[in-house]
Length: 273
Image 1 (cartoon, rainbow, N blue to C red):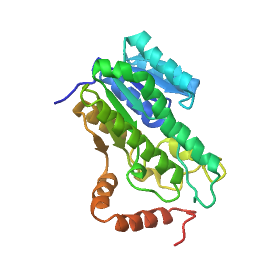
Image 2 (cartoon, rainbow, N blue to C red):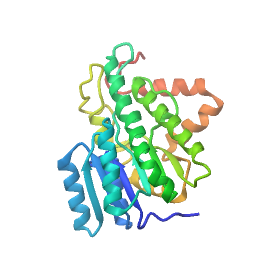
Image 3 (spheres, one colour):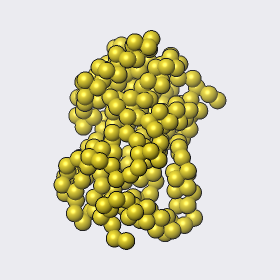
Protein backbone atom coordinates (compact mmCIF):
# COMPACT_ATOMS: atom_id res chain seq x y z
CA UNK A 1 0.00 0.00 0.00
CA UNK A 2 1.30 3.44 -0.92
CA UNK A 3 1.05 6.19 1.70
CA UNK A 4 1.34 9.49 -0.16
CA UNK A 5 3.53 12.14 1.41
CA UNK A 6 1.30 14.91 0.03
CA UNK A 7 -0.22 17.04 2.80
CA UNK A 8 1.98 15.44 5.48
CA UNK A 9 4.19 17.37 7.88
CA UNK A 10 7.79 16.24 7.53
CA UNK A 11 10.47 17.25 10.06
CA UNK A 12 14.05 16.89 8.81
CA UNK A 13 17.24 17.43 10.79
CA UNK A 14 20.49 18.36 9.08
CA UNK A 15 18.34 20.09 6.47
CA UNK A 16 20.50 23.07 5.49
CA UNK A 17 22.58 21.11 2.96
CA UNK A 18 23.19 17.72 1.40
CA UNK A 19 20.67 14.92 1.79
CA UNK A 20 18.51 16.91 4.21
CA UNK A 21 18.19 19.85 1.86
CA UNK A 22 17.47 17.61 -1.14
CA UNK A 23 14.83 15.72 0.82
CA UNK A 24 13.17 18.93 2.02
CA UNK A 25 12.93 20.23 -1.54
CA UNK A 26 11.60 16.93 -2.87
CA UNK A 27 8.97 16.57 -0.12
CA UNK A 28 7.81 20.17 -0.56
CA UNK A 29 7.62 19.60 -4.31
CA UNK A 30 5.20 16.72 -3.66
CA UNK A 31 2.96 18.88 -1.48
CA UNK A 32 4.28 18.13 1.99
CA UNK A 33 4.76 20.71 4.73
CA UNK A 34 8.45 20.67 5.63
CA UNK A 35 10.06 21.72 8.89
CA UNK A 36 13.83 22.12 8.63
CA UNK A 37 16.30 21.89 11.47
CA UNK A 38 20.07 22.47 11.34
CA UNK A 39 22.75 24.56 13.03
CA UNK A 40 23.21 26.96 10.09
CA UNK A 41 20.63 29.75 10.24
CA UNK A 42 21.88 31.11 6.93
CA UNK A 43 21.56 27.76 5.21
CA UNK A 44 18.10 27.14 6.62
CA UNK A 45 16.84 30.56 5.58
CA UNK A 46 18.13 30.01 2.05
CA UNK A 47 16.43 26.64 1.64
CA UNK A 48 13.13 27.80 3.14
CA UNK A 49 13.11 30.92 0.97
CA UNK A 50 13.70 28.89 -2.17
CA UNK A 51 11.02 26.34 -1.27
CA UNK A 52 8.49 29.07 -0.61
CA UNK A 53 9.51 30.79 -3.83
CA UNK A 54 8.55 27.60 -5.66
CA UNK A 55 5.15 27.50 -3.97
CA UNK A 56 6.00 25.05 -1.20
CA UNK A 57 5.24 25.19 2.51
CA UNK A 58 8.31 25.35 4.75
CA UNK A 59 9.51 26.70 8.08
CA UNK A 60 12.81 26.29 9.89
CA UNK A 61 14.30 26.27 13.35
CA UNK A 62 17.99 26.54 14.21
CA UNK A 63 18.72 23.20 15.86
CA UNK A 64 21.77 21.59 17.40
CA UNK A 65 20.60 17.97 17.80
CA UNK A 66 23.06 17.39 20.64
CA UNK A 67 20.92 19.75 22.75
CA UNK A 68 17.60 18.26 23.96
CA UNK A 69 15.96 21.69 24.27
CA UNK A 70 16.74 22.47 20.63
CA UNK A 71 15.16 19.19 19.53
CA UNK A 72 12.06 19.92 21.61
CA UNK A 73 11.79 23.40 20.08
CA UNK A 74 12.04 21.94 16.56
CA UNK A 75 9.14 19.57 17.18
CA UNK A 76 7.12 22.35 18.83
CA UNK A 77 7.67 24.47 15.70
CA UNK A 78 6.13 21.73 13.57
CA UNK A 79 3.16 21.30 15.87
CA UNK A 80 2.38 25.00 16.29
CA UNK A 81 2.80 25.72 12.56
CA UNK A 82 1.21 22.68 10.93
CA UNK A 83 -0.69 20.95 13.73
CA UNK A 84 1.41 17.82 14.23
CA UNK A 85 4.15 15.59 12.91
CA UNK A 86 3.66 12.84 10.31
CA UNK A 87 7.26 12.06 9.38
CA UNK A 88 10.46 12.59 11.35
CA UNK A 89 13.71 12.17 9.41
CA UNK A 90 16.77 11.94 11.67
CA UNK A 91 19.36 12.97 9.13
CA UNK A 92 21.81 15.18 11.03
CA UNK A 93 25.09 13.30 11.03
CA UNK A 94 28.82 13.42 11.52
CA UNK A 95 31.44 11.09 10.05
CA UNK A 96 35.08 10.30 10.75
CA UNK A 97 38.19 8.75 9.18
CA UNK A 98 40.97 7.53 11.49
CA UNK A 99 42.40 4.35 12.96
CA UNK A 100 41.11 3.61 16.45
CA UNK A 101 44.77 3.26 17.55
CA UNK A 102 45.24 6.96 16.87
CA UNK A 103 41.87 8.58 17.41
CA UNK A 104 41.12 10.91 20.31
CA UNK A 105 38.25 9.41 22.32
CA UNK A 106 36.48 12.77 22.26
CA UNK A 107 35.92 12.21 18.53
CA UNK A 108 33.84 9.11 19.33
CA UNK A 109 31.88 11.04 21.94
CA UNK A 110 31.05 13.74 19.38
CA UNK A 111 29.87 11.16 16.85
CA UNK A 112 27.61 9.48 19.41
CA UNK A 113 26.23 12.84 20.53
CA UNK A 114 25.19 13.80 17.00
CA UNK A 115 24.32 10.51 15.32
CA UNK A 116 22.83 8.58 18.23
CA UNK A 117 21.71 11.03 20.90
CA UNK A 118 20.49 13.50 18.28
CA UNK A 119 18.15 10.77 17.05
CA UNK A 120 17.05 9.82 20.55
CA UNK A 121 16.18 13.40 21.52
CA UNK A 122 14.16 14.12 18.37
CA UNK A 123 12.26 10.83 18.58
CA UNK A 124 11.47 11.39 22.26
CA UNK A 125 9.77 14.72 21.64
CA UNK A 126 8.09 13.75 18.36
CA UNK A 127 6.83 10.35 19.49
CA UNK A 128 3.40 11.34 20.88
CA UNK A 129 2.56 13.17 17.63
CA UNK A 130 3.85 10.33 15.45
CA UNK A 131 1.79 7.83 17.43
CA UNK A 132 -1.30 10.01 17.00
CA UNK A 133 -0.75 10.35 13.24
CA UNK A 134 0.38 6.71 12.79
CA UNK A 135 3.37 8.33 11.19
CA UNK A 136 6.93 7.45 10.20
CA UNK A 137 10.38 7.71 11.76
CA UNK A 138 13.32 7.53 9.38
CA UNK A 139 16.86 7.03 10.63
CA UNK A 140 19.53 7.87 8.08
CA UNK A 141 22.03 5.14 8.81
CA UNK A 142 24.73 3.78 6.50
CA UNK A 143 26.38 0.67 5.14
CA UNK A 144 28.66 1.30 8.14
CA UNK A 145 25.61 0.57 10.29
CA UNK A 146 25.29 -2.88 8.72
CA UNK A 147 28.93 -3.97 9.10
CA UNK A 148 31.89 -2.42 10.88
CA UNK A 149 33.79 -0.12 8.53
CA UNK A 150 37.56 0.20 9.16
CA UNK A 151 38.75 3.70 10.06
CA UNK A 152 35.15 4.59 10.97
CA UNK A 153 34.88 3.08 14.46
CA UNK A 154 32.89 5.95 15.94
CA UNK A 155 30.72 6.30 12.84
CA UNK A 156 29.87 2.60 12.65
CA UNK A 157 29.23 2.42 16.40
CA UNK A 158 26.88 5.41 16.33
CA UNK A 159 24.95 4.04 13.33
CA UNK A 160 24.64 0.61 14.93
CA UNK A 161 23.35 2.32 18.08
CA UNK A 162 20.82 4.31 16.03
CA UNK A 163 19.64 1.14 14.33
CA UNK A 164 19.21 -0.77 17.59
CA UNK A 165 17.32 2.13 19.14
CA UNK A 166 14.95 2.58 16.21
CA UNK A 167 14.31 -1.14 15.79
CA UNK A 168 13.28 -1.27 19.45
CA UNK A 169 10.99 1.75 18.94
CA UNK A 170 9.44 -0.14 16.01
CA UNK A 171 8.72 -3.21 18.11
CA UNK A 172 7.33 -1.19 21.02
CA UNK A 173 4.92 0.58 18.67
CA UNK A 174 3.92 -2.31 16.43
CA UNK A 175 0.33 -2.23 17.75
CA UNK A 176 0.04 1.53 17.26
CA UNK A 177 0.43 1.66 13.48
CA UNK A 178 3.65 3.67 13.52
CA UNK A 179 6.25 3.01 10.85
CA UNK A 180 10.04 2.98 11.35
CA UNK A 181 12.48 2.83 8.44
CA UNK A 182 16.24 2.42 8.61
CA UNK A 183 17.77 3.99 5.49
CA UNK A 184 21.29 3.13 4.34
CA UNK A 185 22.65 5.32 1.55
CA UNK A 186 25.97 4.37 0.04
CA UNK A 187 28.80 6.88 -0.18
CA UNK A 188 27.04 10.13 -1.06
CA UNK A 189 28.42 13.34 -2.52
CA UNK A 190 27.40 15.63 0.35
CA UNK A 191 28.96 18.01 2.87
CA UNK A 192 29.10 15.33 5.59
CA UNK A 193 32.15 13.88 3.85
CA UNK A 194 34.05 17.15 3.95
CA UNK A 195 33.22 17.71 7.62
CA UNK A 196 34.28 14.19 8.63
CA UNK A 197 36.54 14.24 11.67
CA UNK A 198 40.15 13.08 11.66
CA UNK A 199 42.03 11.47 14.57
CA UNK A 200 42.45 14.74 16.47
CA UNK A 201 38.90 15.98 15.85
CA UNK A 202 39.68 18.43 13.05
CA UNK A 203 37.65 18.35 9.85
CA UNK A 204 38.91 16.18 7.01
CA UNK A 205 38.36 18.79 4.29
CA UNK A 206 38.95 17.24 0.87
CA UNK A 207 37.34 13.81 0.57
CA UNK A 208 39.66 10.91 -0.37
CA UNK A 209 37.01 9.42 -2.66
CA UNK A 210 35.91 10.32 -6.19
CA UNK A 211 32.72 12.33 -5.69
CA UNK A 212 31.71 11.70 -9.31
CA UNK A 213 31.20 7.99 -8.59
CA UNK A 214 28.94 8.54 -5.58
CA UNK A 215 25.19 8.83 -5.25
CA UNK A 216 23.86 12.37 -5.37
CA UNK A 217 21.76 13.83 -2.59
CA UNK A 218 18.82 14.08 -4.99
CA UNK A 219 19.05 10.36 -5.74
CA UNK A 220 19.06 9.56 -2.05
CA UNK A 221 16.02 11.81 -1.51
CA UNK A 222 14.06 9.94 -4.18
CA UNK A 223 14.86 6.59 -2.55
CA UNK A 224 13.84 7.94 0.86
CA UNK A 225 10.48 9.21 -0.32
CA UNK A 226 9.74 5.93 -2.09
CA UNK A 227 10.63 4.03 1.07
CA UNK A 228 8.47 6.28 3.26
CA UNK A 229 5.48 6.00 0.95
CA UNK A 230 5.85 2.21 0.70
CA UNK A 231 6.56 1.86 4.42
CA UNK A 232 9.78 -0.09 4.00
CA UNK A 233 11.59 -1.37 7.09
CA UNK A 234 15.06 -1.20 5.52
CA UNK A 235 15.92 1.05 2.59
CA UNK A 236 19.09 -0.08 0.80
CA UNK A 237 19.80 2.29 -2.06
CA UNK A 238 22.57 0.81 -4.18
CA UNK A 239 24.45 -2.37 -4.99
CA UNK A 240 27.05 -2.14 -2.21
CA UNK A 241 24.40 -1.79 0.46
CA UNK A 242 22.36 -4.71 -0.83
CA UNK A 243 25.49 -6.82 -1.26
CA UNK A 244 26.67 -6.03 2.28
CA UNK A 245 23.30 -7.01 3.72
CA UNK A 246 23.32 -10.33 1.83
CA UNK A 247 26.98 -11.33 2.15
CA UNK A 248 27.00 -10.70 5.90
CA UNK A 249 24.36 -13.41 6.35
CA UNK A 250 26.48 -16.08 4.65
CA UNK A 251 30.13 -15.02 4.77
CA UNK A 252 30.91 -12.26 7.27
CA UNK A 253 34.64 -13.04 7.25
CA UNK A 254 34.76 -12.56 3.48
CA UNK A 255 32.96 -9.25 3.97
CA UNK A 256 35.62 -8.17 6.48
CA UNK A 257 38.25 -8.64 3.79
CA UNK A 258 36.22 -6.79 1.17
CA UNK A 259 35.76 -3.79 3.44
CA UNK A 260 39.41 -3.79 4.46
CA UNK A 261 40.58 -3.76 0.86
CA UNK A 262 38.09 -1.07 -0.12
CA UNK A 263 39.12 1.26 2.69
CA UNK A 264 42.84 0.48 2.32
CA UNK A 265 42.67 1.52 -1.33
CA UNK A 266 41.58 5.06 -0.46
CA UNK A 267 44.20 7.76 -1.02
CA UNK A 268 46.26 8.32 2.16
CA UNK A 269 44.52 5.45 3.92
CA UNK A 270 45.97 4.67 7.37
CA UNK A 271 45.38 0.93 6.78
CA UNK A 272 48.24 -1.41 5.88
CA UNK A 273 48.26 -2.91 2.38
